[in-house]
Image (cartoon, rainbow, N blue to C red):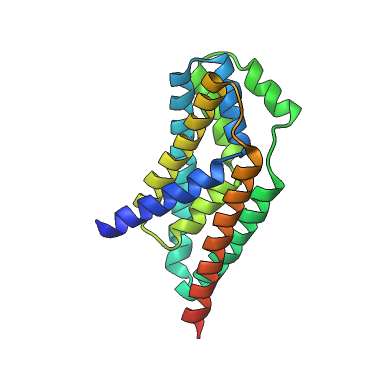
Length: 195
């Protein structure tokens, strides 16, 4: 149970931070201007749960086949990369924004489909794979899903009710710093294990 809670907490924190300022968070805000909040959140939750289940499956498989020292080293480098990616920022293209604004039919299907496609290969998917190589798959799956949905729900609330954006520079630099800290910690752990 302790391993599950650790995986849940770490995954929640990492994915919540990774999602701040991500393009899917911008999509959540865009969909919330077109559809009611609850169908948007349901669509986000279903898509996230599916993508992150696939991610933990990949990560668990890698974790079972690679030595833990190498996993820590690779994960640390990946987290440094996620930090750089976060500093670079993410934005919606005009095409992605248009799709979010024009979506017809069921709001849940529209949001779920858009989020599923947007998350494939995204940094939150890659971070979930990385976390699953070192922690229990179930805790990582639940924690990463809740972390992403919580960050997107925050974007919806902020975008809809407060009418202003979170301070983007503070979020960007804070998230990048946290990724760098996790990355350095994992690299150090990997180097110690490989000795």
